[in-house]
Amino acid sequence: MSIRLLHTSDWHLGRTIRNRPRTDEFAAVLAEVVAIAIDQRVDGMLVAGDLYDSRAPAPEADAILVETLVHLHEAGIPVAAIGGNHDSAQRLEAFAPLYRAVGATVVANVHRPADGGLVELASRDGSTTALVACVPFVPERRFASTAALFDAPESWYATYADGMGNLLDAFAAAFRPDRVNVVLAHLYADGSLLGGGEREVTVGLEYAVSPARLPATASYLALGHIHRPQRVAGTAAPGRYSGSLLQLDFGETEQQKSVAIVEAAPGVPATVGEVPLSAGRRLVDLRGTLDELTVAAGDGSLGDAWLRVLVETDGPVPGIADRVREALPNALDVRLVYDRTAEGEPGARSAGVSVLDPRDQFAAYERLTHGVEPDPALLAAFDEVLALVHEDG
Image (cartoon, rainbow, N blue to C red):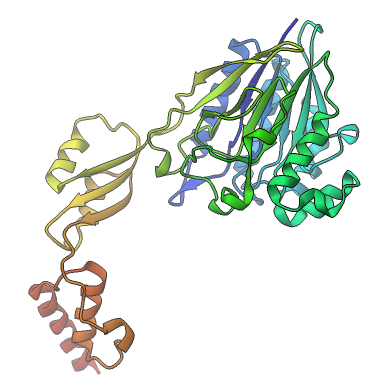
């Protein structure tokens, strides 16, 4: 008498990297998630927020979401999902009836447990039911209206952490001992290790919730918002951030992405395992001289990874970024690394460059931008261009 659930979150459909689309990567990794759900014979899927990366996603992102939900529906796997801080609650609510038609219940805003805030997922054999307390992301500015749903006084949300703790308590009051009780929430549990690609304003101290305030009576705490997969420390009930599906930015280069498989029965804590994800392109930091980078480009070890490249030089080298991208077409960022010994002329910033003649303006720009004295050959080239301008004038 148990139920088996797949926990995932932070899909961020529509996310680009340095304006490069990742549509194929998202489609591939979600196809992998569906295959894992089928292979693991799960009874349902939990999605802990941030289905989309923006409130106005591209049609390609919609197509991936719909296709994923349809495939899960065809496999007999219902879905309970919530809105995150990147999602448009109004948009998710508008499409909720369509999602329900393919077996997905998407809760975009907080509702009282009796009014849609508590979603039921049954095991395939009908022996066990999970009660999923759906707690979407709550912006600080909306806590008053959220508390009003529970007829709570203003003191209920004196701080964000207090308000979230009281809100979670209100959901936990609706749990039943004969059910598997799950908290599905998009929030920042204090002390969690950030992934590197989160929106900083929503993972600061003002949004931090003490792990001790997460309901002890839950069988499992399925959390989203943090992109690094990890167990949540300091909770009485087992809890986990499943993390993002892909390495979303270069702060996540060392992270192995995964989904969580949760096995739970009424009255006992859930057991949790991880299944790693392999779809999508890696993000790799690469550093070396131009010669070393050229060798790395030819050894085949980088595959199709997206690259952030640090080029070691003795100083500014005009056109070197183009040469790096010729050797490494997947280089998204190219930065030069060298000793910056010159800090520019004292007071150059405060005095302004308008008092300088054009040549000195250009030299000051080079010093302030690159931290070294401009190359005499570069200044000579500037003099030639300036002379041509004066001739044409």
